[in-house]
Image 1 (cartoon, rainbow, N blue to C red):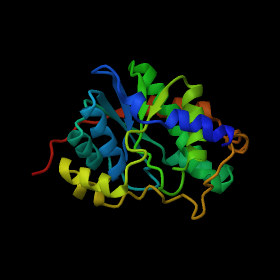
Image 2 (image 1 turned 135 degrees about the vertical axis):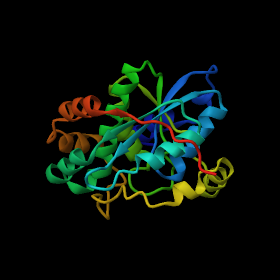
Image 3 (image 1 turned 180 degrees about the vertical axis):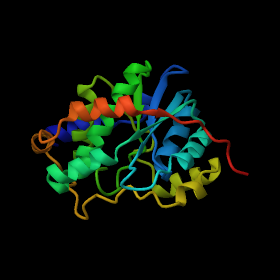
Image 4 (image 1 turned 90 degrees about the horizontal axis):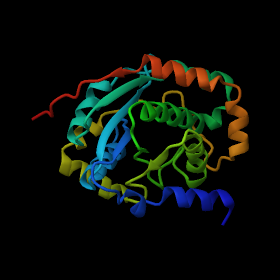
Length: 234
């Protein structure tokens, strides 16, 4: 097994990492889809307090933060923030090799989330990453993405990493988020049709150097807004 595979496997292990004392806090990167909502709910079941961070693609795509807030309420999450990434996404497309788009974008998300976690004294990040998905969700790409989180001094939890998609869908139905998550996310508007699935960190860093990542992170943190959590629909 290669070094990236070994390191990634160590970082991506689900069971031991999640068995923490009750009321550890995790910041969940919450999209509008099935996986991240179920991941957050799983953490709550394990005794974690979950806060949510949604990355909005506006103005590139419509703002869905109100719907995501309703998903957060079902988790249930304690608080939610929204960071606008549309302009940053456009810069990635403009300046970087397009096939690295998802990995670079996810690394930016990790750095922004890590900044919020430090500010709010939250001990870990959490995602709905699930092996077998396309795009950035391969072991090699997760290794590259986790390096950004590790460099920022935070760990990443992936509660549904090895779940079958069928099980994720069933759990979404149980917790009442299936219909909400079935709506289009439109998160791939700028993404390539043939993204890199076995990214090398050195090549990712070379492309990322074309951006002022520190400025993008600082700008997102400064403009971040709190989002009220809507009551579930009946």
